[in-house]
Structure formats: C-alpha cells, structure tokens
Image 1 (spheres, rainbow, N blue to C red):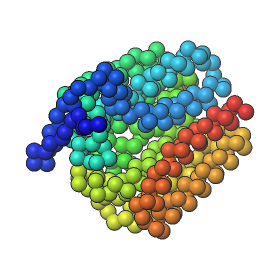
Image 2 (spheres, rainbow, N blue to C red):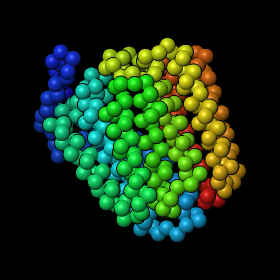
Image 3 (cartoon, one colour):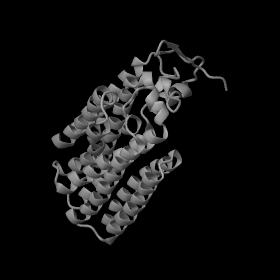
Length: 310
C-alpha cells in the first residue's frame, strides 16, 4: 500500500500534509491510535488492580467500578492524545514515531487531535466527579503532570524530564484506590511510587536503544546527553529502588505469600537484566530490558489482584 501522507521539511521544522482517500474505518482507527491504547491499557490495569485491592475492605458497587474504569480510561487516552499533539514535530522526525496518526497526516489538521484529547479528558472528569473529589483530583494531577510538567515543560529542556514528569504515571493507580475509598493511604502511595520508579527503567532503556533518534530531535533523555555508563548506573539505581518498594508494599498491606513471592522473583529478574545492561552496555540488551518492563508491571499488579481473591 502506498503512503497516504508525506512529511516535508522546511529547514528543521517538519511540514505535515494530509493523508488522502482515508476510509471511515481508517479515520476511526487513527483517532483510537492517537490515544496510544497499549499505554492506556497498562495504566488502566494498575487502576483496576488497586480498585480490586481497595474493594476488599470497602463497599463499592459494580456500577461504580465501571464508572471509575471508564473515567481513568478516558483520562489516560485524552492525556496521550494531547501529548501526541504537543510532540507532533519531533514525532515526524523520529523513525519510531513517524507513522503515528498526526505526523502521517491521518489526523489533519493536527489540532483535531488536541480537541479530541481535551474532549476525552473533560468526559473523564465528569465521571470522576460522580465518584468523589479525591478521584477527580488524581485525574487532574495525571494530566498536569504528563502534559504540563513532562510534555510541555521538561521533555525538551532537562534530563530531569522523566524523574519530575514521571509522577503522573503513578496517578492511575492512586486514582483506583481513591475511587473506592475517597482518600489515599501509605499503601496506595507506595503502589503509586512503584509505578513512578518503573518509568525511568521503561523510558531510559528505550532511549538507550533509540539514542541517535532522540539526539537528532534534541530531546535530552539521560542516555542521550551523558555517557552510557553513568546513565545506566542511574537506571540501575531506579530498578533497585523499584524492587525494594515492591517488597515494601507487602509490609504496608494485608498480603499473602503470592504477592511477596511474585514481587521478589520479578524484582530479581529486573535487577539481573539491569545489571546485564550495565556491565554490557549494548542496545540489544537495553531493548530486552525495555520489553521486560511492561510485563513486569502487569504481572505484579495481577499478583496483587490474585492475592486478594485468594
């Protein structure tokens, strides 16, 4: 199939042209893709897992469960769509992202993606408000952290982009707890911290693999702007902290052996892969760590739910 759009360049600024002859199905698909559904699924899963954990000791109807799931899904999807609009220029330059709906011209003009994302987020706030104020605040915090602090402020300016902007990644899990209980506690904060510490491992390993592409668009990810050994040392430290927090969660909650055993095994696996990359800094090893990171988080949260059920 021929490309339906082309990205031209005026100096260093990409000029996006509209895709032609798109069917209704392709247009719908583009608006779904701009929300990054795979990313949304993982974040929503952390929220659902925390709702299951919190629901064990609090009254929470299935209707409220569905409303909360819809709220966090729309919020994550909306934030991703707005972020894609913000990053449309660098996405057009990077080979890894040039096929996305905005740079490929499948959503044109690009501002339509912004409107789409804001509409999704507004709907999420309405659903969250019907739950409680704490849940509503969590969604606001996620949007402000991801789009405001990370995408608009720090991503192109500082190596602290992932560290300071990454706190938004923990907000869906915190939302899940708050949606059920109306508040937060030590356990929910530790679970949110686990996700925040997971993010550097996930993003820096990817940036190490795509180091040249990030350098070309001048995004100062740590593996791009510092020597590999130093960057991998920082990555290893975050993985160690992540593994320790995952075990700390066991002591902060009422868990059985299932969660603890899962946390220890996954933590050791993450540490082994991180040490392997640190000692042998090759892009392929970083890619393996990146591919492991999402299953790590998914399985760990699945273990939380299974532990409660059992």
